[in-house]
Image 1 (cartoon, rainbow, N blue to C red):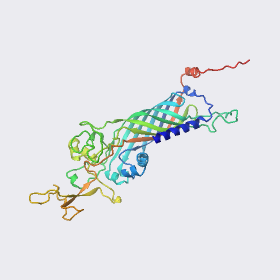
Image 2 (cartoon, one colour; image 1 turned 120 degrees about the vertical axis):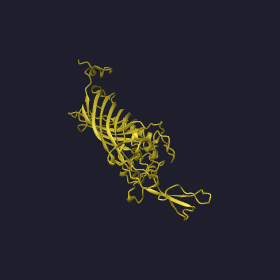
Image 3 (cartoon, rainbow, N blue to C red; image 1 turned 45 degrees about the horizontal axis):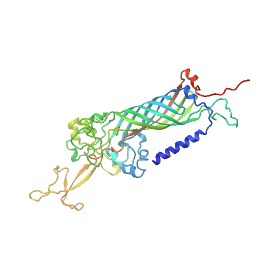
Amino acid sequence: MIRIYICFLLCLFFESSFSQSRRFYDNNDYKKQRHEINFGLGVSSCQTDVGGSQYNDQELSEKFGGTIFRSLYDTDLSSSNFALNAAYVYHYKNRINFRGNLIFSRLSGDDKESPEFYRNNRSLNFRTDILEISSVIEFYLKKPTTGNKFNLKNVKGKKLASKVLASWGVYLFGGVGGFLYNPMAKNNFHYPDVFDNIGFVSDPDKSTYHKLRPLHTEGQGYEEGHSIGDDFNVPGKVFKAGKTYKPVAICIPLGIGVQKAFNQNMGIKAELGIRYTFTDYIDDVSGLYYDKNLLNQYNGNLAATMSGTGSGDAPSSTGEQGTYRYIGYATSYDANGNPIYPNVPDAFLTIDNNDLHGGTNPWYMDKIYTEAGFKRGNPNNNDYYAFLNVSFYKKFSSHGKVYKSIHSRERRRIKASF
């Protein structure tokens, strides 16, 4: 609520400030040019479960203000991509416009670009093309003006027009939209020689981008094995049997823009817009690692490989490895009183008669951070993406009959000329 109040007070401040500016323009001029088209280009960025900054999940949540500034610190600018946009604008009121957007862009992320151990070891990557259609409302805090060539002055000697050819306009916008997406990824995985990887041979194709949605990489729609939300208190979305996430999702565009008019008909806009989405699968990552043997059985070797289950390849510079040593203790005995150990080949299980951490009959084996049931993504936070665009705009004159009706409802006093 505090943030809402602050935003409201800022809007009032800007509005009151700009309302004091010189007003010699006709407030009905917008009716003469109600139609406008925009074309532009820019860059895109996204915040998903894949890629990101050098900070781990705990640091982002605790050190940087929790959810307030998390996205600012966890954005990987090196993964920025192109964005192309087109729009139609209808000038509804003097300060209110209706706009329809069409945007084509690409989003991407790569764990290998992050120096944070957990992400780098995970080795996930993705890219997806976005086709977005949205409808927004623009509200001007300050309208752009073009001045006049005569630099006229009022009765107090102040210039009516701006000192420069054109002054800037500032506007906010918000609305609703939908977008198509289709995440793809390359096989960047390395599978250590541990018990969980016995008998598994990953797909050898390392150069092709594979479509991830048909692979059900987290076991979406499968009942056996580790289902989403089983462990780590990770709530996940439940899918119907055989189903996975949809290729279309809803987004909420919000942002701010500045506008500079060259003349009454043309100008440029620079706009920063954030899209809050209702999906966590833009990068195909959301819940837990799924049993790769079951994936192999249901969907083939490619699905098992692209899930990343059982992989691990942390860089040596971090001082950590993609595997860790798991220590256990025998808790049951056979008829002769001998301890019973896990049924694991001797090459992967070590029995140590020494007392470790105060336990008896210890054994240990190497395990991985990416085994089935471990956390793969964070379904508590949906994905979002953002655009920074620069657009050229052109206004078109309305029908000639409009001119006659612009001031038709105004009362005028006619002064006699004699």
